[in-house]
Image (cartoon, rainbow, N blue to C red; front, side, top):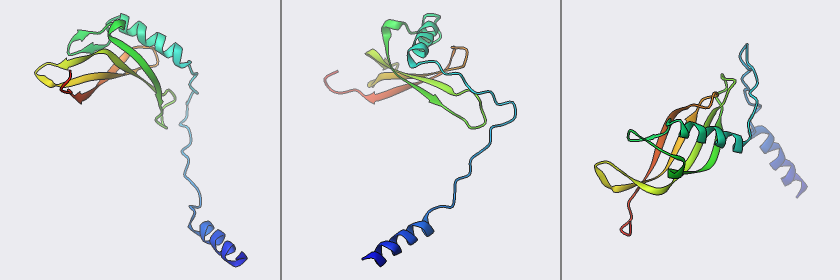
Length: 130
C-alpha cells in the first residue's frame, strides 16, 4: 500500500506544471485605490442622474433600474481595472421591433472618473405570461 501511495505522489509531481508565468507590471504602473462596492454604486447612480445610461436612445433613471452587482475586471497591462455594474430593470423592457424579447437587465462599464462608457443589454425570450 505504501508503494502505491508513493507511486501516486511521484506521478502527481511529474504531471504537475513546473510553474506559471507571471507578467511583471509595466513601467509607470500605479496601483489602483479601491472604492467599496457601495461607493461605486453611488458613483454609478450619479452618472445615471446625469443621463449617461440609455435604452435605445432614451435616458434611464434611478427608478428604472436596481443595481445588483459590482465587478472589477483587470487587464494585466493596465493599472486601473474596468468597473462593471450589473442592474436589473424594475420592469422588463421591450426591444423596439422585437415584441417576443424582454430586456431584464443591463450592465454598464464605468471609467475611473465615474462616467459610463459602455453598456450591454441582457435579453431573454418573453414568456407567455408577460
